[in-house]
Length: 99
Image (cartoon, rainbow, N blue to C red; front, side, top):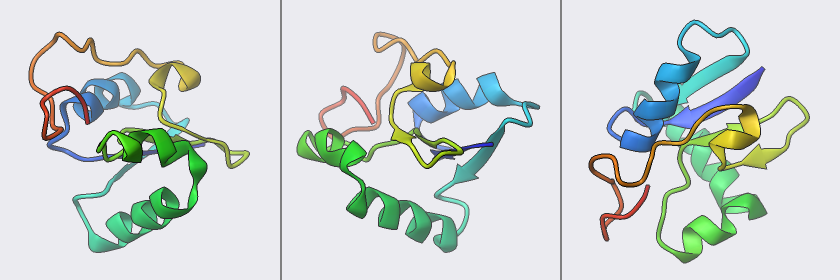
């Protein structure tokens, strides 16, 4: 099962979350629903090098995927999902370009 860290208010997350509705291969973990989920995500973000680039540009690093073998990726295509087109609607970063 692929763990998918998202947040309800993130447009990138909402876009890919729709693609996995009813798919038992994905466990959707909303980091805004419970502090335990947020802490779990922050621990991963603070310790895994997959987030280095996202942190360098001020992005949070969601959606984030953790594969069964422990591989962490921030790229939806790596798990067979289509990312939200960047010219489609709002963004949640401070500079308005990403999440």
